[in-house]
Image 1 (tube, helix red, strand yellow):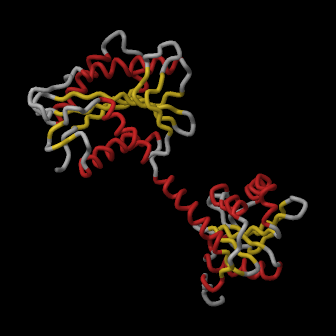
Image 2: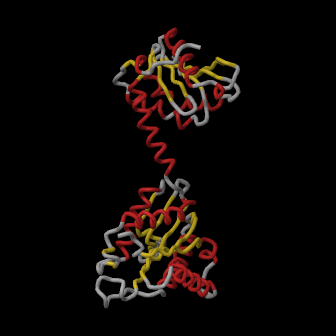
Length: 332
């Protein structure tokens, strides 16, 4: 085993290949959980043979040995077994040293797909420019992987409340709700958070019916499989919780309003053949009663609504939960 490879001493600066580098970095995602070497004599060829490269690697890769794939001048991809032991049993340093030797011998490019890294070597030297491009892409990949999916919306709602509680918000001042607060403002704050922490497509005022222009749910959330979650946003504020002592807004009956609207939206979306995933009522409130009491009220309104003949199976099947969010639960 040779001495540790010194990355900085082994770097060559290669330019004008950013397009090819970017294409090669895609192999990190296309060939997940794989460890292999990939050799090519000219970087330019990868632009024309990328699909063929991915297909050949996926079809011929074996986890029980270490293979080197090679893009030939005619566009075909061949492979050879370098070691009869699993690539996962080798340290990254061993893979790099093996690639350096082959690259020096053949004056070629060797892409090393290690367990958690992607490295390009040319004529025995590490390519720093590729390393930087891959680092940028991996940072984006890692960030995206941390983002939440459609099945994690309830956790997202918890985090939304927690962030607002500790960072504050622009519609609460001195433990009072500003008189100017609106349902749209509350909705937009939730939309911004969803856009920031999820990997989902967020649609404000998602139209649920082609025939009823006014039938739009506050927030539509769409995942990569075109599944749709809908969120109806409501609020009520008891007198004494606004900056102006005589002001109030709505009442607990907003729970009933929310369930009625979600019921219609679920019916419409199913008629329009949407892949409806779930439906949520997000209720902002400011009230003297405890969270437990408010939440119990939401369940009572729900229980009353589902007994009504207008309550549809579409709603019963897709309704997920009601989120009760205390507007003034914000640290000063």
